[in-house]
Each structure stands twice: as structure tokens, then as C-alpha cells.
Image (cartoon, rainbow over all chains, first blue to last red):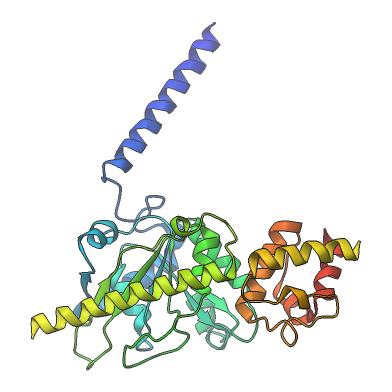
Length: 253
Length: 80
């Protein structure tokens, strides 16, 4: 009888704790980070140190954020949970700028084998959150690693153009980001970042509305044709962000 | 056994790689890149779908070895 009472008491306590947690999340009081780990944690010491150092280095050049519309502002002001951040690639230091945009999150990046296989740079980048991808083969291990970090609730920043385009025009994007987001079941957040004009210039970035592949197709393995359609949709969202950027710039002038 | 797997693979290809691969060309001798015109993203997607369907696990080393549909069937036969 006493044991039964104790079990009931523990169950009640757990239920209360669960209710409290879910109430906190639904009321928008959730933390600015993924809610799983604090902003700084010993487990992620190298990554957090890198984020901190990069942010301090970039403090004068941190990105000016704009949103595509009110909906995008509401949903992406504080990005929570796993998400793929897709941005255009205009300069080699874009990851640092994106890091200043998402300073409150632990961001993972994909880095090519040429950099990641270097003796000192490779391990340093890995500890700072870079995932090695071999661009000469279909690197399934890298895809699996990306899906894992996303499922754990981190953000993955990708530049799906497949190279640097200094003029800032996004002509086409590769399907890797969509494939990873579909497999991990997370949203994709399109970002358009301004091409650099000079070294002392604070760049702007426009954050668009999250693209939910799940809403588009509920299957775990949509057909390639459906993936192509989703990719087109994502490209349209990036173009919308680009148009908004042009609008913002013309307003300022 | 091989024919059974081949038939199932054809169904899987049709479902997953619709519009990207001509399923009528799928045979054990068909080369993935040269004959089926598969790009790296299609190969990745196919591998993930096969993993899900048969419970096998592809590795980067497998991608260096796998050239034909027959190689995929052999992998499934060995591991599933």
C-alpha cells in the first residue's frame, strides 16, 4: 500500500513536471537556443569557444538582419530546434557572418575534404562544428552525420549553390539541402546575404519564411520529381529574400 | 533470389527515382552512371532508400566499388 502511494506520488510529480515543461514551450518562453543544452556547455567547449571567439572578432561587422515579412520574423527571430539554414555563398568568410547571425545556436557546417584532411586545420574545424564531406564521391557518411546533428536539434548551415558567386545572384541550387532536411524531418530556413562591398561594410541578410518539406510531402522518401519541385520552391523563397534585400537597399538610399 | 531482389529494386527505383531514371533499363548488368544516367544525388538517395527497405548499410567505400545494379543486388544478398 505504501509502495503504491509512493509510485503514484512519483508519477504525479513527473506529470506535473512534464506539464510545466510543455506549458513553458508553448507560451513562447522557451530559451533562445535549442532548449536542450545551455548557451555554453563543457560538452561543446571547443565549439562554444570557436563561436565566442568568432563572434567577438565579428562584433563590428556582425550582420544586419531583416525579415521577408512579419510571419518570417515571428517564426525565425529565435530559431529553435533542428533546422537547415540555406544561404547564398558570396565570399569565403560567409560561415563567420552566418555565425554572427545565429550567435545563439550551435551551428554545423559542411567542409570539403581538402581542408578537413589538413593536419592542424582539420581537427580544429571538426571540433568547431565542421562536418567533412568528400566532394569527389557520393559521401553518404557526411549525409548521415548531417541528419544526426539535425535530429539532435542543432542547426546545419549550407551553401547549396555549390560554389562562391561573388555577384550574389542565385541561379540554381543543388538538391542536397532538401534531401538532408527531408531525411531529418526539419524545416529549411532560406537566407539571402548581401555580397561584400568592402572590408569595413556591415552586410545585410534577409531571413525568409521557413520551408517545411513535411507539409509539401509527408513521405520519408518522396520521389526525385517531388524533390525537384521542392528545390524549385526553395529557390523561389531565396529569390523572394533577394528581392526584399533589394527593396531594403533602395529604401535606405 | 536475384530476380526477386531485382524486381523489388525496380519497384523502389520507380517509386523513389521517378523522372530521374529509366526503370526499363534496370538490369543486373546496367551501369548506374553510364547506362542509367544516375547523378551523385540520385545514387545517395537510392542508397538511403535501399538501406530503409533492406536494412543494409552503405559506406563511402561501397560507393567506390558499386558500379552496376548487380553490385547493389550482391550487397543486399550479402547483408540482408
